[in-house]
Image 1 (cartoon, rainbow, N blue to C red):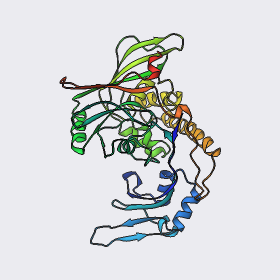
Image 2 (cartoon, rainbow, N blue to C red):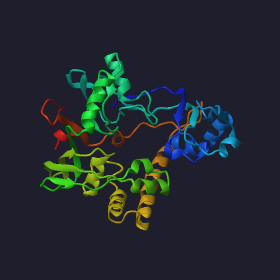
Image 3 (cartoon, one colour):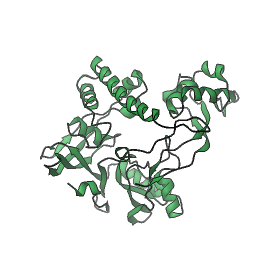
Image 4 (cartoon, rainbow, N blue to C red):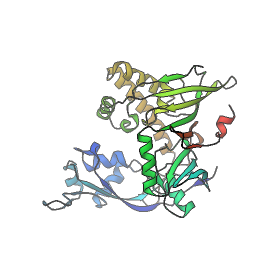
Length: 363
């Protein structure tokens, strides 16, 4: 396995303050948003004025810069504030695909067979180790991703040669004029009949490690979701089932969550195959924000935090900034048995399809 590594570099993060930051202080926000650095390192950045807040930009009141430990500890973030944070940036390594596979091209659209383990867009700790950057290097020009595909998921990604083409395809997805089909390998023997799952889903990913209030908000905002599943093959030797998945809504981690709630999580899903997630999701479905739901949420957060911290304790630190360095990812951290297999227009005008991934051929 060859990894693509990016040398650390200095980067000034300039972020329009997000809704979830409102009412909090800069020290509180950077502690949760920039987790690769310690609390002491954040404090040093504030003292060195590498982290500060801009207020009233573009207003008649006049722009002000809020700097220093005392001022930032006593200032609550407001709508319109801008956070500046200059950091020594470290990106996690990703699988090096060398050349990305082009499945098909039509007009201004290109269908890519995305490898697992690479994010599509810059975000979080990834700025250069992402698919849009790799495609720009490969094609020699900028391309525009028309939809989202999770970092751990492989398969079809449709990009536009220009922003208009990508936007037009995005509209087709929003209008539900496209059927998407995924392959997943799950634990256990999945029911042979076609199964429809319509459990509403809450955004666990955005509430994890952000406290009970974030969890409460996520549950209040849960949304209708629907996925259909059909068995393709059951392997008696491994007790795993290859399943065709057709999502009819587009919620975050929808297929992964629905499979786990049905008792058949994706075999190598490090988050949703946990018993703690299944029990939490079903408790929320049945009883919403019960005391038991908060207990299960706390258990899930504790389990995932302990694993993350154990990896960090074994990792070296950067000689320049003292940040904990990213260790090489384990194989199970580089991908899921979940693959975007086929996209087709409901009017029959086009379709894109990839070959089966290696793990699906073994079934």
